[in-house]
Length: 124
Image (tube, rainbow, N blue to C red):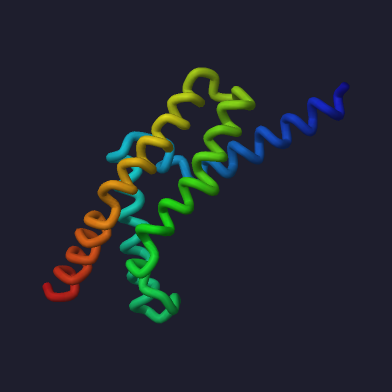
């Protein structure tokens, strides 16, 4: 009945809100990396300003893998299951899985590049 439809709509809306916050993880690798880097540098600034007790580089690589495994990929599967984006839902899941795979392979070297940028910024 109507109650069931309302509950279903509320769940779909919740998925959409969650997805909008992390949309970069479900798009092309270049989009994901652009926003990942910006977030990393923002976290470094927070650490250097004393607003964070841990340097982001300490856990960034592993943290991203956990984020994909326990949040992003399950969320992309839920979006696909509820069908709200039609065929695009399968694409979001595919990008999330590809980005996770690429990050697992290259993430450590990418974090090292981020750190090099930070050092160059501080030195110059």
